[in-house]
Length: 398
Image (cartoon, rainbow, N blue to C red; front, side, top):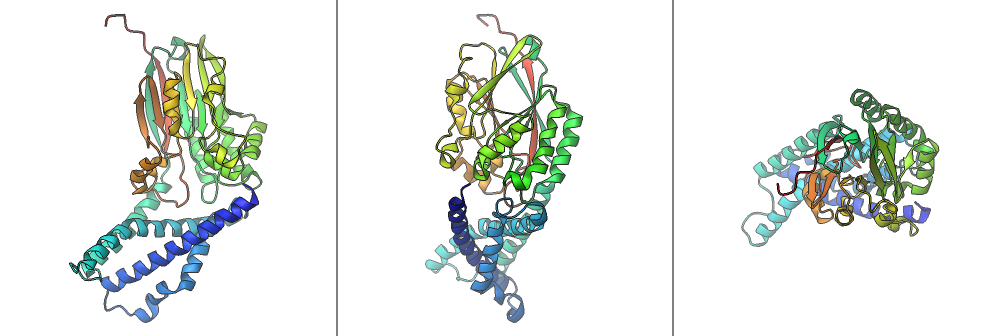
């Protein structure tokens, strides 16, 4: 990302972080005061109302977005954890306490309740937030589960029957994710022994100069799959610098599909593996954009099974119209954190799991890692194993 874009981005984040910190810390102060009216305010809570503390809180949040871009990742990963946890804590406070506060404000405006929350409600809100925070961190730290999906189609040739494709997505190697998750993926891939591994974008949060060793180790997952590892870009590759990352990944022998396809012939039957660039690529680089027609050039009339890798599930409508059989996507993290797993539908028509759009099967991976706060609430990280099954064409009239 160009320096001017980083400056603009950090300036916007700083303003949002200051406002978020100011509101949330003030709200926490009010709730603690309501829940524990006899508590000594002189030393314990008064600092929550100070703008200087809000500014420090905002600076801590902003520091997360500099790791891997302006600051080296490994020596500052501790800061990534501190800032990520704090960011997640404030976000949970906002999501869980903000709507209640709005309801209180409306009712108090009509003199239906007092402006100060009752002690029971204040205590319940505080307890809910802190329990949710603990559960969210614990869930995020759990290793990704393996989801098994079977895909049946008469377009899957007999030679492809039983082919196992492992999808990884949204790993987000960066401020908090690194060696630990990558080594877990090595152990699981060695156990699962897939025939093919596909990475559907958002591998990194940071630049190659800071993450190259860990990304190189991730790319070594290729050795567990007889037909290799294939990669497409996600929006975070563009945020981190898509061109250097694509060059780095290709230099290490991994095929990056940028609006192109490769045909794998297995036991006499063809599998067209197609990859397009991220849906938002043009926002970061005017010369780049997803172009499915270009990627399909030369195979439109083929009767072989067509598998599309598209980071964002938004591509599914066009994919269905152009005769794709199976689309694998990520990007949404299944919302990652309540209530975002509800609000995500405002941006993405498909959030998580399996969907059927006419002849197209779409699967949206919940993310093998997470982004931002190390929290997952109402969602779980996953690795998805697809098994292709040949389904004979039913006789006409049946």
